Length: 256
Image (tube, rainbow, N blue to C red; front, side):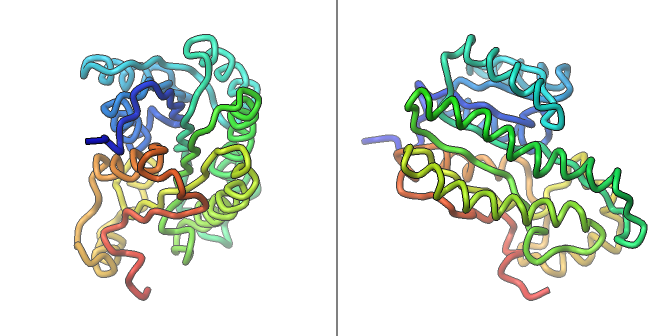
């Protein structure tokens, strides 16, 4: 019987693969046989994830890059190509958040978040997709959006705006890259406590989230692996592009 989720022989680039959620998805891809490049701003954290993959029997290597510093992404792409020859899967999982109220927001903070969540994602994708097209290497690009992308959530104005942009970029690039056999989709996670959002999760906020989440709990990082593996696999999702896969405990089905 064919294993629809087998990624043996595939190379995955996990940008932000050193983060809580990015690391979990990268591990999921590795467990299915993908060779994984863990790309992160903090190389020490990336090395931890890489070691965990290798210790579990997978193949991985760490690369340093900051998506807000595009020359570092260019350098990492060249290093990954030298290591693996190319890539078939790009997971865009960098993220930055802030709870600054709108009327207190300043341009430096707006630029900082947008540089990572939207601008960084767009131009990192440009770097990696261009090489895929040059090599005529079909594959999958997976963007990480958020339930705050639509409708926007209070307290995270800039983050919500950036993730709404990710949704638009995902659908645009799905059309742009379809003739090259490159699928572009996004995962919309619900509430997964991670480093970037713990500061906004006070008791009142948690109560509000639970009220609007039918499963009445936060997600576990491992619960994103299935969506990432599905979208990475040409066998499982070969005719799926421009699509948003929600992993949110039912949050998106509720009226806010």
